[in-house]
Image (cartoon, rainbow, N blue to C red; front, side, top):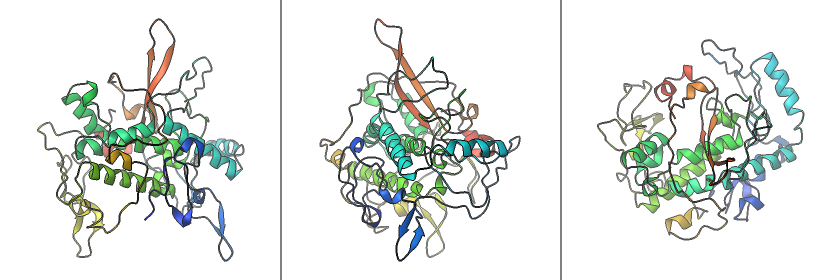
Length: 396
């Protein structure tokens, strides 16, 4: 097994088809292997690279009331990544997308732009631009994504580690002081989706560093069509295993979900599933539809807790391993320390069409100038009205 085929910027000891990335500091190296951005291979002849893009075998029709189907995809559509746009549902969008993409026709240069974007998100130097030149992002954020990967390994239990809703509930229940601040794995996971795909900012058509970029990884509806999705989630799975090792919770039966009278946020079903009613508490024995064992019964989280002894695979040494041993992390970007927690209110997914970023600003002592001190990536759908689960968890 590869250590992390899509490293999300950190370190590769091995990867697909032998690609090797030696540098520990992603700011000075590739953030993902070349196998993802070569358009073709020469293996006993010319073949298209299946990791570069996916070509739709059938159309995807957006069937949500009161929409103009602008997020539909036609048969033959090929997935794209930052800095390209994949908005092709309407004639006007197709024309705008064609005009945008004509400025980015060189795959090699596009790969460099994407590498730079992911690296910037990782070390906290990404600057979110605005259509308003009078209100640019004056400072890079100081809370980098790599730091979030590190912090999530310190999550006190599996429930908090697994999702942002439970992490927010934990902070509320335990006070807002620094010792109780926690980060779930979902937080850096979401940020990488937006770094590879793109996102929306209210009042702006698109607030990426490159306006108009609209890749598939940035949208819930299309993210898993991009082949890179599965390698990103390979690294997410790797991070989960590192958390289990750090907390000595690798054996089957050692993980549990918080049972709380308040129905701990993020631990109940939202949509109706086969034989499971909405608002049913989740636990390690909840069926993982649609995955079946050879005997026809459903897999559960209990069955896949121990990847080495139950699933018979593992991960080699990687960039997060020093966290397990409480050692130094090489190549770590400088990030500002956490000194205070600020909770925001009244932000709902329904207010935004697609993924977006919550940005936090502060004024320094003796100055009226605002500087950006942090941001949170929210991976969402273009239309939440067609998603029961989204309707049940609109507040972020």
